[in-house]
Length: 204
Image (cartoon, rainbow, N blue to C red; front, side):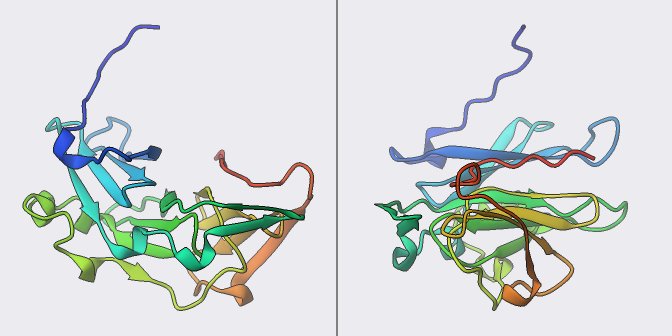
C-alpha cells in the first residue's frame, strides 16, 4: 500500500463548504495517454477537471450543477428530510475512437439530467479566468425524472443506471434517447434495500 502520486487541488478552486465526490476517470487507451479526471463538488456546485499529464486542474461551474430548492425535501416511505446537494451523479458515454465523449450529470436535489461534451471541459483556457465563463456548453434535457437521484453509472452500450429516492427503485435510461418518463424504465423495486441509492458500479 504505497502512495504513488498525490495532487493537491489549489485553494482557488474550492470553497470552505466544498465536498468532492464522484471522481470520473476518462481513460481512452491502454497506455492511459490523455487521461483526465472529472470530480463533482456537490456543495460548491462545480466540476474540477484534472489533467494528470500536465499536473494541473481547473474549475468549471454552471447553474445546471446547482441544487433546485423545489426538490430539497426528500420523502422516502414516510421519512422526510431536507438536503440541498448539487451535482453528484456523473458518468461518461462509452469511448469510441475518434469521437467525443459526453459527461452526463445531475444535481442530487433536482429532477433534471444534464450533459457537456468533454472536449469543452478539457479546454483549460475556457475556465482559467472565470469558471462560469461558458454557460453555452452545458445542456439540460427537456424531460425530467419523478424524484431526486444520487449516483448514476453508464455501461458499454450507453445505458444509464440510477436510483429514484422517493420510489426506492433502480432504473435505467438509454442515453441515445430523450430523457424523460417515457424512456425511464424500472429494473427493480425494493423499499428496504433500495432506499437512497448513493453508489452504483457497472462492470463490463
